[in-house]
Image 1 (cartoon, one colour):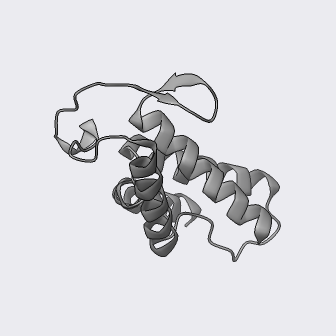
Image 2 (cartoon, one colour):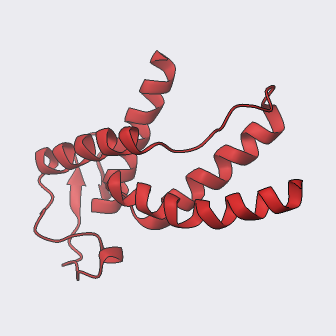
Length: 124
C-alpha cells in the first residue's frame, strides 16, 4: 500500500509542481526541487503521519505577483518571458543593486521568491 500510494503521489506531484512554479514566476525545475525536498525534509524531521506537506496554489499566486512586481521595479524587461515558456530571452543581465553583483532575471526572481517565502515562514 505504501509503495502504491508513493507512486501515485509521485506521478501527480510532477505536473502539479511544474504548474505551481510557473504560477510563482519561476522556472519549472524549481517547482520539482521544492516538492521533492519539502517531502524529504518532512519525512526526516516530521512528527505527524496525517499532515500533507507541499506547495499550494494560492501561495504560489501571491509569490508570483510579488516576484513580478519586484522584477518590474528592478528594471527587468517583462516583454520577454522565461525561456522555459518557449519564448526567446534577449539574455541581457542587469546589475542587482542590493548585492552589487550581476544577476539575470531568473536569479533575481529566485532571490525575491526565496526571501518572501522565508519571511512568511518566519512570520508564521
